[in-house]
Length: 401
Ligand code: C5P
Image (cartoon, rainbow, N blue to C red; front, side, top):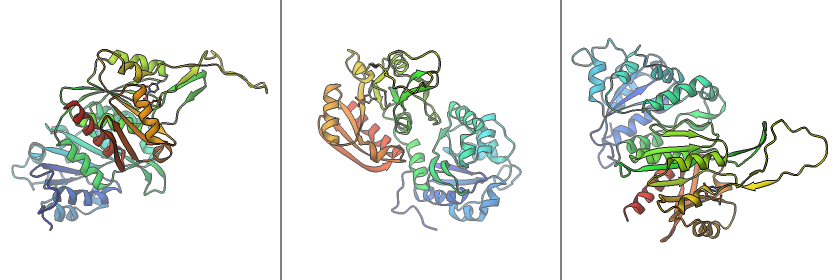
């Protein structure tokens, strides 16, 4: 077997318990296990009975160099109490893939097999990498379970979107092994924002025209949620003020749901003071002056809609005497540097993140440029989690200036 040798040794000596549950993405866990070992981790694999139907334990035994634990009654570990011992030894438990069923059992605190028992008996951190069919991911029960698991402090890595084994396309795919490795490594990283409060806005706002119609902006919320997750990883206390999205709350992040720009404005002001404010939300610049109380009926004629401006949340926060370190986002369709620098000047921001809307919207990856007093800093295309970590590192550098 390859040894860590001159490879990435970012996880040197870390005891990682890799849990594998019964989904087709279990085959990707083999590569993830190999990457963990190459990064210097001491990996112990635990498989559920269903996982063993997808990939043989022998595969993981060969990759981790240790017998694989599959049963609570196994005597493979010394004192006959493998759940207590393995949970005690691990610096981190990471379950990849984590099926919908496993997340449900985790949310309930069930302990009906070795892996769920280990998760319940642990004293250290736990991360899960959900992997399931798109419809299962979108099910209300899964969303409830995810929210519970995140509220319990479990780190949720992914899922990603794309073509699935069943032929469906959408959210639910397990992150790629290299992305999982980056996520796990970040959990052990330095915590340069420990003791700082970070406030993030994300997603679109929705401005009602009548009870069933409204004005909104295109925004999935993914970048803002990634920024909140990266700030949390860096040790900050994070509050995420979110417009309507269908994303799970990042682990350890407090989320406040809002719909309109007015509600977002009020929620942000109520959360101040903060050390850092990152305004990622695509806030509607205007709202209908009067939302109709009843559904408007079509009568074949044209209609005038009177719009009034919404408050500029970021500009207002940046102008306060107790202003946090403020970061703006600008999605432009052309002349990025010119528009981004103008926006930075007008809103008096130390840092602004620019991107070309057509290159980023609806995509898993982003190509960003950071603008500050020192000039433009391009961040080459990468997944949004990696970009968010790079942005947080840049913010940390500014705070330490
Ligand atoms: O002016 P524009 O909408 O392009 O500015 C983008 C930046 O300002 C983003 O960071 C966005 O979150 C923030 N913004 C805001 N309130 C508004 C409009 C934009 O906080 N009403």
